[in-house]
Amino acid sequence: MTRQISKAILLLIIVFNCITAFSALYKPVPIDSVDYNRISYKKVRRLISLQKHFGLKTFAEIHPVCYNDQDSSNFRVYKKSQLIKQNIEVVWDNLINQSPSSEFDGRIVTFGMLYSKKCNNILYNNEPSTGLEEGQVLFFNLRVLSGIKNLAVALEVTNLDRENKIVEYCYVEHGDTKGTQRFSLTTTAEGFTEITQFTRYKCNSRFRDRRLYSFFHERIVKEFFRKIKSQSENVKHTAI
Picture: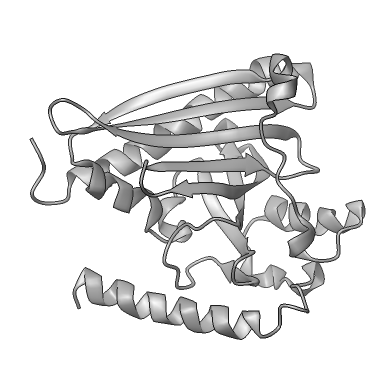
């Protein structure tokens, strides 16, 4: 089965699920409906359950807390770039069209589950997906200190600009961090691709802000870049 046919079948499955979900839009997915047996990570299960502590009853009530220009002095900045020896369309395809189970499956970051605001449904690990879309709220598990400690984080896809090759995520409310993560692709003079990760963030504690976040975020981004680079450069017909 070719990759194009596989994607077409997955798209039909997602469209069917969306149509079914839209018929029940007056009933947003309750947080209590989560099947915790299908989520492997204790911290992710706890983060989802914790939403009820803040008075949220449905996933539709979860909102992003993005970088705020009016409060810019309180946000810190992280930026890192990576050269990928492949044309921009191949890299973009690897960035947005993989299932989250495949894309976020590293030693540090692993996918827990997501809620789609567009389709009003939940997607668990290894379920069919056509990739990223705006309005997805993704829950991740982070293995830090070689697995001695695990953390959970949730991000919402707030911008997916196919023309300019940009994806933006914002942290969701009631978490330890606020801000925006931005991935952008540009073509180099050689016909290769430069991927840049630019983050503006603000943590609830100064220690986390100045010490922990940048330390672990650096490792998370490096891991993600290695995976995208390997997947993209292993595709045939590399551009030069």
